[in-house]
Image (cartoon, rainbow, N blue to C red):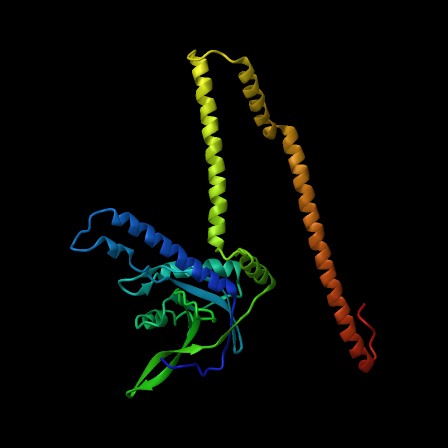
Length: 319
């Protein structure tokens, strides 16, 4: 593999692609660990050990899509692919179906290449790369390194192209690393900023904070369930005559039950729909106001540019 590419192509990578690949790997890793823990409970067979099931998770594979304008390639999104580890081939029927679905939603997006995970390029990667050349004659290869390296400051992701080099008198395709820039739109910047602020300031991780929050909700629901069960058992015993009647308690239970159908009444539905429609109306008005302001800025810029042109050509302003 050569050190760097000499094609002169500029690559722009969007954060959504990195998030998708990371999410794909994390889900597969969690599933592998879960199945490994289940199999470790059983006695080992064929001379194997129970700990062998807890090996590293397999690699993930998928396609990257985007647009190419001249010498600039912009990678917008990605989707997962089915991979046969025995034959080292991709499921082409699944790939063609996903490509057809994406074409309906994003007609300008094309398959630019594929992605995988690992610390470095493997020999079998060239087989997968060649299998995609009928879709894109020069596909790109995006490789994400899932290993955590605290001393590394750069993103653990690399983009590779292929170049034809003569090795020992034989022309061969080899992977060469290419440089890239991170390109973001406003929606992606907001999402990344939101994720960055999820980490607590006390040094704990975001996962710890989320786990504590979910644990509190689970404890509250569990407590509510236990109290409802006790109340139900008490009423059943009272109905059977096992315990004496308590009219005061029955009135409190009746008062509590009468509150439940209130949220299903016609009056509640009318008020709820009215508030919901008012909220949607305010959202639409805010959107129209924003669009109007943007349009006004565009018109002002156009008038300024057209006014400069009219001074040379003797034409009047647009608006």
